[in-house]
Length: 106
Length: 106
Image (cartoon, rainbow over all chains, first blue to last red; front, side, top):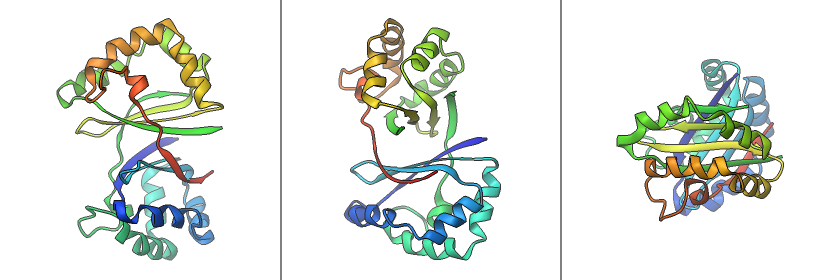
């Protein structure tokens, strides 16, 4: 099992809408995440818009590639892109860089 | 079960040493974490020193208070404090602010 964390930055002025959108993530988006191995997936927000993602997966590359290949992910990421800063033209799911795990206790 | 994430900033020039210290966390510190309800606890580092913590616990306040009451935690936090920026005179475990969960998928 791989533990993965990433950081993105939500535009502060769009934060309330970002949070509201995540209270009603599309069911087919949730199904796609489940079907491609994303488990125990949580997003956390700091008031300034810093977004922390954490999830667990058997194979990170397979989870990323699996989601990338779904049609619903392309639609979701296109809707989410305007909420973020500093994507450099990438989709949100392409812009994130996994952080390095330095400690774990079960 | 509560899922908790927090962010701290390790001094970039101390990062290698911080990582090395976390490869050999004291066994009594690990026992104290386990004994006060810290589970599935992971620390992640970004190359600039941003530190992300994630853990799961039945009761966050009890986990924090439990660790605070241990002698080993006082020793550990005193050793870790110089590695961090912006603690404002607090111990690292007092300086962290839990982030707000905005999405979860099991």
